[in-house]
Length: 627
Image (cartoon, rainbow, N blue to C red; front, side, top):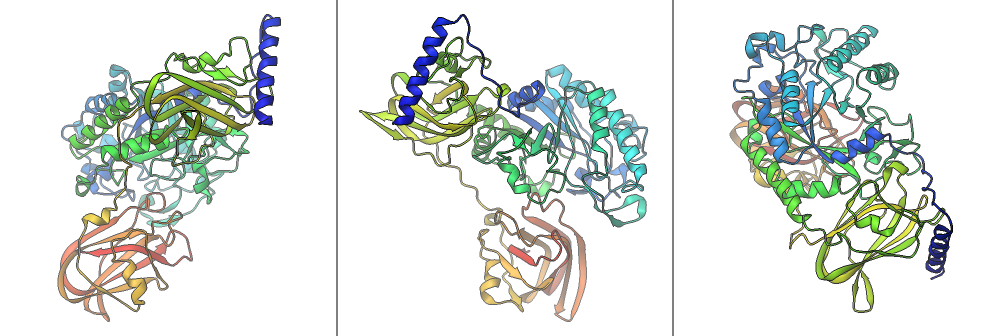
């Protein structure tokens, strides 16, 4: 009660002060604060990602750098079809993979022969980057570009000569295609590659090798309005997963210079650094399919509308942006099902958040600054007006009286982030009779930032109350909205393994309790294997042609296999290797991994880990399926 009385007193003092003075000064910024371009970037909220290239035609996620450019041959490529899809899905821009890790360039660069000039597409005269840029200009969509620093094709990668090449490549790309809103640098850097035929593993100093200060100079010169993405920014940061969600607590800050590509504590990027001194808001990247590039066997695994809606609330609604990837197919088109799901997702969000119950209501507050920083600013539909409390007043209550009793199950709050992110804790309540009850949120109510969307059970009330309990400075709330989204059900994510059935098997040299964990179709259990291999006994000779491996699905995804060797035979002592390779991107996207090989009749199959993602770790396998 003392805190509330103090807040009321502070509010009265502020009101008296404003009546006696011609103006009331604006709240001081609470550092760090975003640059104007970072604010405009976050206002985009949702935008598209496109992965397309040699990987598409060679059924790969991370190309090794050795695929023949002549395999790139889309017959119906239509960048306008992409852009129209994104527009209908409510997206404000698109980020395009101009070059992925395989080093293949989708523009006619003069710096390497490993590019679109040497493909059948338009008889070598095509330019996918240019075609997409033109489509974006025509339809009013913003363009951004992904240029992978890692290049598994280039012979001089990991030497100083490659850094010069990369800088020249960046300059070329940033000069010829107009204005971009973001430049995307992937965190995957160094490792196995073709490297001009060397076929070896190369390591680099991830913090210093690429000379990022020089890169920022180039971008400041050529694309000063662009926000720079990487694991640690500086413009925006990776959210620490490829699942499309941020933490319920999500600060838009990082400690400057601490996070770098390959940062070992990447899971904390979901939440930001509460004590950070650099504004680096989170971007949630996720693919509409399990993989980033198109794979025909994933045509039946496109994310459902409910799944996409859930991700919106957990990304944009958690003070981040949503970057939704569309794998373009062999024809050069976004498949119809992907397009339909994305458009319906946008329609569903508009329907759920279509009728703002707080529009135009007169909020009642326990503290106000006076002047133009009035409570009405929270419900006037103007981003640049905001309610503020007096200096040093970090807690207050706001009551929103509705025009009549309404059903409510969503609430949205926004802070005026040009002056910094402030709120550390708040509570939302509804009135029932003379009592105030919590809306029974399923997640913590801590940070707000650019936007916080809350989902809760349906309540009927004529008043809502928000109690701001603590903040980093005086409150600056510029928007509050409430909605009734209909009677929706909580989204449940089902494991891909539910759809897969395979041969029964026993595991040689593994305790029964552990062995059962990898065949129980329960992704929450994982078998720990002490050796670098497991031998599976099918009990009899079977015709087999694939192995499907679901990695450990715990929060930190332990025991991930990076490189593998699969052998088969009719005796444990007489096994023949049928497939070797890598599980690309498994660290960041630990989804079901499928390996196909020429059908063979055998009783035994052995999976060997020739390299682990984390050296020294033992294998952990949630599921193994043989078909």
